[in-house]
Image (tube, rainbow, N blue to C red):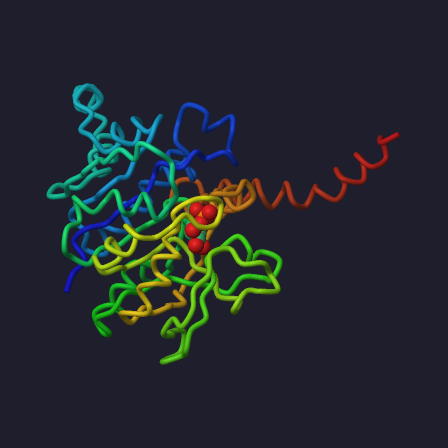
Length: 303
Ligand code: G1P
C-alpha cells in the first residue's frame, strides 16, 4: 500500500506575492536556495511517490523547466569540474521519477485542480501537496507520517493542526472523533467558516491522502466558498461514504502563502542550512541585539 502518485496544484495566481508573482509562479519562490515546489516534491518522493502530477496554469513554465533536464547547464558545470553544483542540479529530480503536467485552463479552485488530475491518477489512492504549506516534519516528513497512518488504517488521511481562533476562517476546519492521540475520524469539515461558527480549532493544512472516489464527488461538487469548486466540499461528501482521518502531524508548518510565514521559513531554514547556519546565526544575534537601540533611534527622529 504505497502511494505512487502525488498531485501538486500549482495553478494559483499567487496574488499575495505580487508583483513578485506577476510573471513567475509563487511555487518557485525560494526558501533559502530551493524553490517551495522542490521541498514539496522531495517530501512526496521521500514518502515513496514515483509519479508527480502538476496541475499548472499560465506563467508556470518555469516549474516545468525546473524539473526538466538542463543539458546546457549540466554540460557547462561538468566542463568546469563543478561536481557539487552538478549534483545539486541533477538531484532536483532523481532517476525513476516521472513528471506529468496538466494544464488547468480556468482557475476554478483547489477542488477543480484536483479533478484535473483524474486522467493521470486513475483508480488508485493518491496524495495532494500544496507547496505553499512548507512543513518541517523534523524526525519524519509530514507525508511519510501520514503514509504510516494510511497503511495502518487503510483510509484517507488529511493533515490538520490547531490554529488560533482569529486565523481559523482562512482554513478548512474539521470536527473529528478521537480514535488515538492526534488522530480522529472526521465527522464534519467546513471550508473557511466564520470564527464563531468553526466546528473546532483544527485546521486543514495542505497535505491529503485520498481515494479516487473523490474524483466522482468533485464532478458533482457545486461552486462553494469564493465561487470556487472546493476540495473541502467534496471531502465533506466523502465522509458520508468512507472513513477520512484527521491527523495532527509532528513538526512545524510555515504558511509560505503569506509574507510573514515565508519570511519566518527563510530565517529558520537558513539557521539550519549547513553552509549558512553559523554566519547567519551570528548576524541574527547581533542584529537582534541592536534592534531595541535602532527602534528607539527611529522613534526619536519621528516628528
Ligand atoms: C486551501 C484549502 C483549505 C486549507 C488550506 C491549507 O485553501 O481550501 O481548506 O485549509 O488550503 O493551506 P487556500 O489556502 O488555498 O485558500
